[in-house]
Amino acid sequence: MKLHVLSDLHRELCGFYPDAAAVREADVIILAGDIDKGIKGTAWARSAFPNKPVVYVADKEILRAEDLRTALLTATYSKNFAPHVRTFLDEAPVSQIADVAEQLHHETGVNRVALWQHMRDAVRAAYTVRDIWL
Image 1: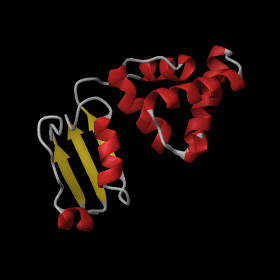
Image 2 (image 1 turned 90 degrees about the vertical axis):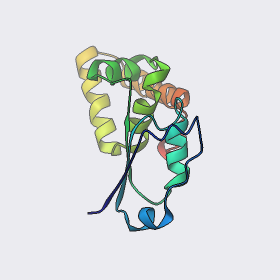
Image 3 (image 1 turned 180 degrees about the horizontal axis):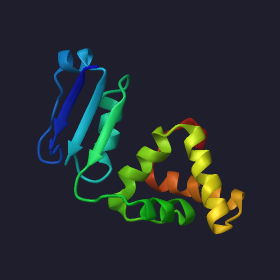
Image 4 (image 1 turned 60 degrees about the vertical axis):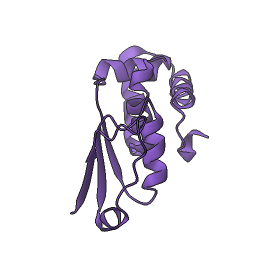
């Protein structure tokens, strides 16, 4: 498997255009560190690498399990966590999202319908694009 790793691009300071040949040869793109300001990095990654799986490892803020749990239960989270929430809701297998929802329902007693509505609200706040959320 060929990886194309890019880190600390700081696109907010200057543009960056990936090497087309390196991208074409790569099986997976890994973006690490400060790619762009806020959630712009994930939007750029989608447009720059539309046909490649992308692993996005954000810098600065680490999303703990409890933070994701709160985000999914309440649809509220720090804007610094938006890339993490977006990645989970956009890219995790649907079966995994359903398993997480079911686990949260059993652990907290939150109604399933309400829980899925909170996740849809989190999706809107994170500007996700996955068809299942439309």
